[in-house]
Image (cartoon, rainbow over all chains, first blue to last red; front, side):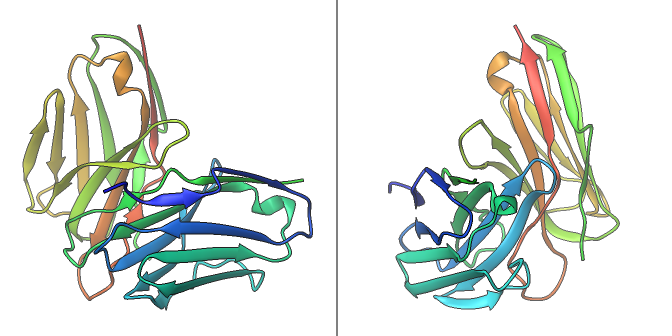
Length: 114
Length: 113
């Protein structure tokens, strides 16, 4: 398996523009998580899905953030409009029902909003 | 909200030295995991500990879960430059069906040659 695949690896955009981050989880994993990592706040859970259904989106910072999982092999995180404070590394991770299995993370998308 | 505090936040040591990293909480976790993250990559799972008092060894790394399942430690023997990275602990909820892990703030380890 190729692991969790995220795209793009790097994104530089201007304030106010729409940004879409993409994630392909590991086949057979029924949980998908979106995290944001910054030096100041560490890893923050934004939202997670189980069997393509959003379960907890309480970490989504504002209405400017939205996430979808139209099928078991694809998820998107969209920011519209983007702001400089959204600059961070965004990670997608997938896992299974086995509580001790752990997460498999993608390599992340480094977002810079100027 | 379950919180995990890691210490120290930063650690810089010479190759060959031993070190211990701590992960503490006031909450009980059903299991605890340790991840290592290298620059430009996502965290990678090192180990999962489940039973209070459990000790697991992974080559030069020794992981221990506290008896009360509220804390954990990671000990590295004879550290090598390849051990450099951000070490994160993560706890699974002690009860309920919630599936999300709580991550600690991390310990940035630098091993100098």
